[in-house]
Image (cartoon, rainbow, N blue to C red; front, top):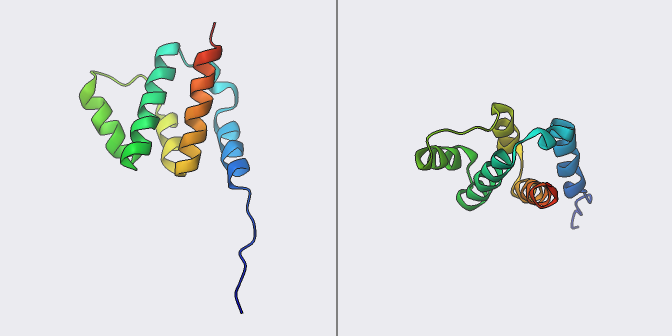
Length: 97
């Protein structure tokens, strides 16, 4: 007998975490912080580690202006969550006047 796993709505969970942790907080990021966040998340998706990405990013520039809470949240997200956050950040940059 084969067990079927219960369907989960992982994407909705990810969006809920982002909304809960950040809400309108992303709107308070400067355009530079949004670009920085997008690059950091892109590096994280590529390397598979927020910590490795942050170290690489820190070596590339003199400072990181992102709040620590951003790194803590990104460290808890799955690969799909990182992609969702990347899309949200890219959209916020696109919509920024």
